[in-house]
Length: 429
Image 1 (cartoon, rainbow, N blue to C red):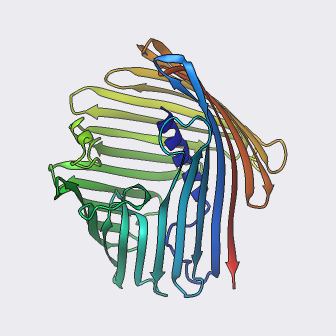
Image 2 (image 1 turned 135 degrees about the horizontal axis):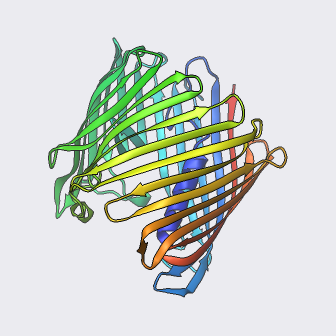
Image 3 (image 1 turned 90 degrees about the vertical axis):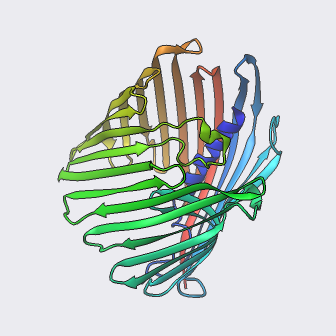
């Protein structure tokens, strides 16, 4: 439990810390000045480690995380960019598992884009998104736009282990051909394959043929989606299409369809890939209503059609009231119902955001789940979070979080987090 909680908090903090920075390796658009950017997030986390079989055995841990991002665009050579992000962690109190000190580089790239954008190349550790696939790679990515709205890309490299571990047979490669007339939309065809070392032989771990598409010809409608075909086992691995429309400036509607194989993104060489061979369809939509005043509301509904014939659904509503637009002070509630083949629950949530004075904010979130059938003897779960933050000076923020969780895995877990973040983006001569 401790490892799962630690990784989840680190991932959430990493995403939040990376938000102010531009996409990795993306050069500054033409006409903008050279710039250097970066961010630093320091987190002190205190939480209980509870043995589900013995709730009285609670121990407290206090890991310290440091997440850093640093990069530059067009500094030195026009079109040249550098991006680096990574983290370090130290378990300074009651380390139960893992190393006392560890860390890794998450993304580290150097990139170059020609002045008119016809060619783009990126080298290093990077995350690629091609036709719905997500690939982590230590290698090279090249993209060419020869004209006539055509896009060509290719990439190849190693699938990294933590802390730059390598296996010569653990490789990934792929490419994409796309047609992207901006006023109409886009369509692209891509291929991605990952190989792994199995008893000295390089076997296919993943192999996907993908199609991505978008339609934006008319201002009132936007359509986008992708489809992935599994080239190892055959069939559709994953597909998702979303259609969004704004019939009125205060109303936004969206309808979506997806087909998902839960094991499609698990390497075939992993033992976990044999745990499920099913798939399900998800069909639903969202509607968001806004007013020129203080009231807003959204509702969502989705049905799930499972391969075994058991169906499920999810419906919910989220109204909110905003008191001050300048500070975004608001209160809201959420009520939802989720039914799965084996169980179901009702959700009742209430939250509030308040800014007592400039640069400060306080958030309270109370989330409750009530199960139709008991889970390990419990018929409900509760999560209460209190967050307080303050902008100490320009681009610098300190934040404290306290959370209490009661669920079927343990009677109670208390966790606390203190986070200091500094992010900057400066233009240079």
